[in-house]
Amino acid sequence: MKRILVTGGAGFVGSHLCERLLKEGNEVICLDNYFTGSKRNIEHLMDHHYFELVRHDIINPYMIEVDEIYNLACPASPVHYQFNPIKTVKTSVMGAINMLGLAKRIGAKILQASTSEVYGDPSVHPQPESYWGNVNPIGLRSCYDEGKRCAETLFMDYHHQNKVNIKIIRIFNTYGPHMHPHDGRVVSNFIVQALKGEDITIFGDGTQTRSFQYVDDLVEGTYRMMNSRDGFTGPVNIGNPVEFTMLELAKEVLTLTGSKSKLTFLPLPQDDPMQRQPDISLAKKELNGWEPKVHLKEGLTHTIAYFDTLLKKDPSLV
Ligand code: NAD
Ligand code: UDP
Image (cartoon, rainbow, N blue to C red; front, side, top):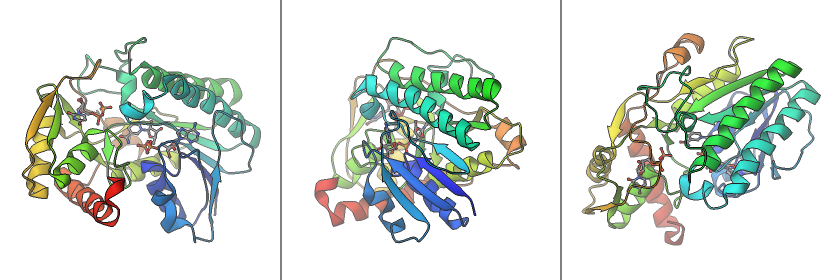
């Protein structure tokens, strides 16, 4: 049994990861400041003997003895990370310094949840880890993109300078149950709009693409990365290479929900990448043949069922 700290554990991805780590027989300490996370996401774990919840903000140092740290704390949706951009940078940068300092002191292995956003609006397609990216340093998305890029730098520097055992994953667009109903990201927006019979908001003309990964595939990749061979630090892309336009996504959501919602076209946000698709050759090679298993239709079906239940239980939430 390992003792594992999960920062951002009450968030969308963190809650699924905590559940998986408990299932593997570990003791899990979930740390969160509840900015975008919620106790609702982890309430099914609260009675677990080896689960502990701590309210803490990672921009402040935290002391604990653990074997591993998964550093997920950071708002991930553009709406949320742009709400207080300075705080977003602090969370990424000071949070990384605090967690790396902790890992160094106690000799823990630490994994960073980085993002495909480090590639910005990419001019190489699909994106391999060797691509340095095309990021605007002074735009609306910069607090997140540059914060995460700086966190990667810090991880590599703590590794080289202090021999901290690090792992970096670059997560591509992921969806599933426990996304915040007002998350603002495209999958939850379209599903909630379809279930409520509201217009589906397509930004731009809907021809921009994303590759959507179901959360179970991400958790599997994350777990394998933490347990990958010594010396393999990454960064490694974890995402689903099957690419869809936003129009295709909207149509699939309408079909699966049977909704009569209409499509409405709104302006494309600043610096919105036109294309994004992971090259997952490195993950396949290093993570025991890891690749996504869940098709969009199946993943959407689970996610629609989740939001449908939430909507019926408490309509004010959605
Ligand atoms: P989320 O917003 O649902 O979860 C983030 C969690 O971190 C929340 O519970 C939030 O309350 C907590 N948090 C935020 N700031 C904090 C702070 N200063 N101190 C303590 N806790 C804090 O987002 P998510 O989708 O679960 O993303 C988890 C991680 O994965 C993030 O680091 C994100 O950047 C990364 N990621 C996610 C995606 C995706 O598509 N979901 C894509 C790329 C990267
Ligand atoms: N998007 C959209 N309608 C929405 C929300 C998002 O068309 O209601 C688009 C957005 O402009 C982007 C894509 O969907 O091109 C993915 O957006 P999301 O915020 O989910 O993720 P990211 O832009 O960070 O990849």
